[in-house]
Length: 219
Image (cartoon, rainbow, N blue to C red; front, side, top):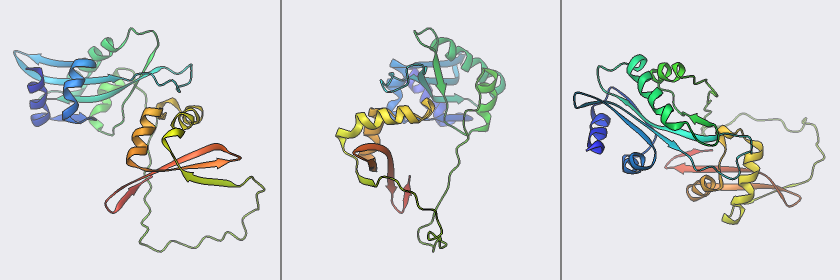
């Protein structure tokens, strides 16, 4: 069974990238691009790509998006040879649609660099993470000397499910397609976060989401 072989690779693999839960493995194998590398009946590698259903709020000229969900190599297998071969085979399966496809990888595993760069990937962004400990006293900021700006007042209110479509359009107009949140993704974010809207003259101008996990919070 392919599913059992993939699970064994997860348990015993040397190089493992996984951006999904094992409960989603059946759907990945049945609906998406999923390839298993085998030699003499033994599995040595697995790769899974998910092609996204195109959000209507993506800009017209933007390509369709797909995501690397899993990339595993067994012990003794090389990212610079076996990994390149496996990625190349998956990319061939992904091509052939009506629109070009942008394959996105969110990860920092150094071993991924060789198979990605060898297959034409480029570094699109480096994510910086800032942390603020609210238990500590923050330095005083002098706002008295700040210049006065004559602008319309900003009204803040909680986001509602009825706002999803409008906010998705705003997101698509202002955010690079690489990071775009569709209405579906915003709904998932609303379900697990506290979301606020910024409104000027009854027009939604921005949004923020804050999720909590115990004593930690993420903006």
